[in-house]
Structure formats: C-alpha cells, structure tokens
Image 1 (cartoon, rainbow, N blue to C red):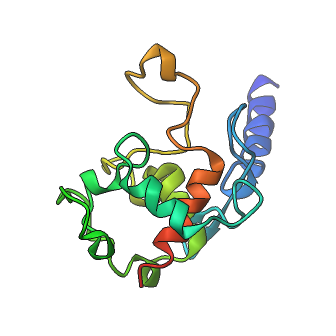
Image 2: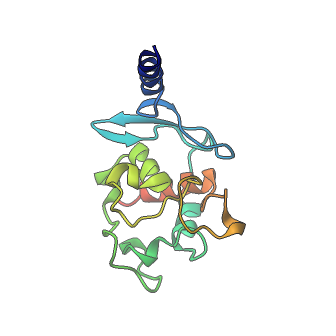
Length: 158
C-alpha cells in the first residue's frame, strides 16, 4: 500500500509541476508561471503585471550594482559604456534570437534555458543559491519590474 501511495503522490506532484505551467515563484516573489514552448521553458506574462520600460532597462543593464550585464556581455548599442565583457555572448541581435517570454526566463533563471553549466546568475531567484551573504538572503538581485525593464531593453536589440 505504501508503494502505491508513493506512486500516486509522485503522479500528482508531476501533474502540478512547473513544467505544466503552474506558479513557480518562492514566497516573497511575484507569482509567475513557466510554460514550455518548443522545448524551452518560458515565462509568458510580465512578472510585475505590466511591460517594462527600455530606458529603465538600459540603466539596470549598465548599473554595476544591479544587472551588471556588461561585466560578461558586449552590447553594441552601449559602446559608450566602458568595460564590456567577453564571457557571455554578444547581445546584439538578441531580440531576433529569443522572444520576450524566453528573455524573461533567461533573466529570471538562465539555468532553466541553458542548463546548470551556465555561469549567468539568476536575477529573480532566492532559493537553491550558494554562498549568499546574510543581508542578501531571501532577496532577488532584481525586482519584478527591473526584470521587465531589462526584457524591454533586450527586446530593442535587433
């Protein structure tokens, strides 16, 4: 009987897993649903309930204490900014490679799209992290609206 009960519980957990579009955010974060599209996890709806502002997103991308995207990526549209990185891929044309739902998932948690080997941090995640300073525990790097702003900026990079 125990084995049967475990099997039933396992099936129920599988049916309500994030892979089928259930809310996946931990407590304290805006709820969101992950939907697999063409084999890739995406987040179709804005985390904050509204679309982002590309100008605010550019500020987050550049700001070393927020997104700090330029530490790893080069972005031609931001050539005026110093010290572009070479670790991550060039972000020019990223809007042609990924739609907004996929870009949102990449910013929220790139490991869901690229796998555990990616060095890109999860900007909207608070669980399962390693070596987090106590004052940052339970806090994402970016707010839900900042994620949306970054997605809006990235969507301009065609």
